[in-house]
Image (cartoon, rainbow, N blue to C red; front, top):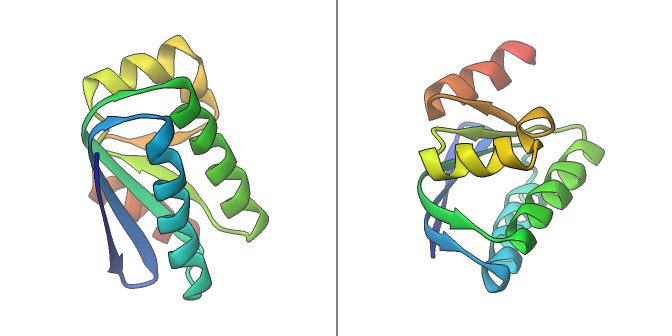
Amino acid sequence: MKINLEQRDDIGLITITGEVSESDSDLIRSCVLEHIEAGGHDVVLDMVAVEGLDSRALESLLVINEMIAERLGRLVLGDISETVERILHATRLNRTLEHHPTVDAAIKAIREAA
């Protein structure tokens, strides 16, 4: 797995590529914490190049979502791969984790709600 954090104004954009497994969950969480500790609230995860998620990675997404919500921010998934979309539907996490068809749409949703 590869991960990259960039700032889009006050929104943290985290791009994840590859297979996301148990060992990667802490890295994703650390990246989110880095953004929050720098004063950010909202995070968009670009997951178009994610090839798979294990159960620990899904659990980590829920923990991250809760962690951000406690700080009055939002976690939004943008541009998810077909694999991720299937996993979210199969686990019904598509009802819990907000997602949009593109990163730009995810960022726009955050900005419009502010």
